[in-house]
Length: 177
Ligand SMILES: CC(C)(COP(=O)(O)OP(=O)(O)OC[C@H]1O[C@@H](n2cnc3c(N)ncnc32)[C@H](O)[C@@H]1OP(=O)(O)O)[C@@H](O)C(=O)NCCC(=O)NCCS
Image (cartoon, rainbow, N blue to C red; front, side):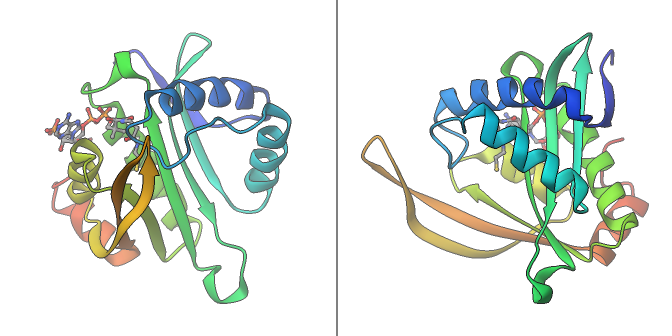
């Protein structure tokens, strides 16, 4: 495919914000319903990049068309784990980009010492759930009615992946590369 996947640079954070804003505006995938103010977003992403976060972006030309971030938790008891979030621009979905971003981000995160990745996903987001399951994530909990979007209650699933599980899945070729 004609995208480039690389670690996010500081000068690409605004493109990341644009992509996130597009996906937030769809209102059916993410818990966030309003894009964060750009200044706050620049500060928080720059800080996370500097404290062991893994941010990978897919670009076509200068446009960011997909991203996957794994933010390392900062509390002493949770520093071995990180939280994952990702998005692919609508026009680029179902071409293997989500899987390519996950492969890159998870490989980097586990190589850099993370032992566990957490995420939360809406239980009606079947595309994302299938993708996560494909990489070995397991459902670990259900938060009933955790979100309310336009007056409708939405459940959130908690999913987790341990380093050993990822390695097993990768070596068994369960994951598309
Ligand atoms: C979830 C998302 C990142 C998947 O990205 P993508 O580039 O479309 O995914 P891929 O093409 O790499 O697909 C990889 C696997 O994901 C699953 N998948 C992706 N889209 C799917 C869909 N519409 N229905 C069912 N399974 C789907 C499949 O298992 C697929 O493997 P396959 O092609 O062998 O069947 C993308 O749909 C997206 O950005 N959605 C909006 C934002 C979002 O939901 N983020 C996650 C919030 S928790």
